[in-house]
Length: 393
Image (cartoon, rainbow, N blue to C red; front, side, top):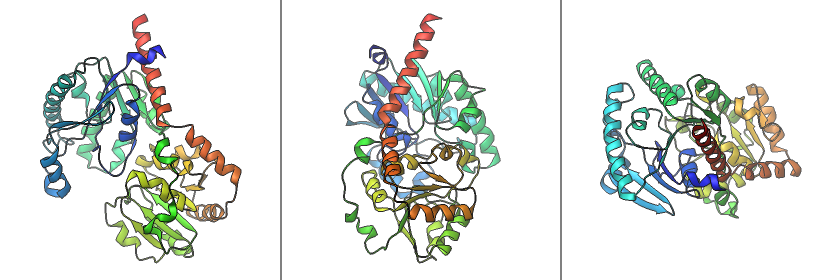
């Protein structure tokens, strides 16, 4: 379509490392954008403190930081220099960091001959960047309720002000849930909801789940979870209860651990932990599960959530049992949503016995209609609409 040709150069502030094992919207969306044009993907700026806390950060600094590399067709990744710490609680430091980053980015854009860019930022404190980098359109892609991360009060205040400034400054704010839509609507110039998509290439590959050595020897039924393994957002009390009351089910949790929760849950003999696996293996694990679960506790972070794992679970036709997450309720009856611990266990038993082939196919068809390419097209269409409105005003 002719209108799509208006937007061919994108600068994405991802607030994530491109080569990390676990991928989120911050990775899938920019990658899908390359079908429309060239993308410069700016990784998150590591804090100087992170080089002390995390050994892998040191190797990143030595190997790739302050360099742009081409990683695919139309896709370039830039690794910024470290930022000054405490920028999440002192706004002046954030402005200094963003001034530094803007200087780096302008240099890289010039090298790559990017001239007519659209800025897309996942970084909620990126407002100072918007006015210092020339662009034709600017977008804030909000995937989380930031204030639900559990930071201290002083940081919450700084972040809240910074995010509101960003929302009021950009041409378009994208959100992934109704909660985030309602939160940002009063401040946004334009706003739209785009739910998470699915990488069709990764999740339609015919891979044999029987080859997963990590699951060898486990007896069915297998109940699986894939994602961040942390006390926020996981409901530890609920998980302990289902582990205790359904000892004949084997529960497999796959993903990065953050706060000692694995050791705590390993007390139960039917709990199995698999460390982070590459995105290429996620579909194989899901296929091996009989039931997939989303056992999250209700807090402000979860209320704003549109869990990417939900669409990934559905892509394999699996029965899904979730706690009472607002965005999950929109997918009933394709998934089962519980309003209590007792209800969750009841629905889990139903899901384990689920043999509804029609519903399984409905899940697959729905997921396949939600590709990241479809999401990008929604986005580009909206940009074109806004551009036309501006020309006609």
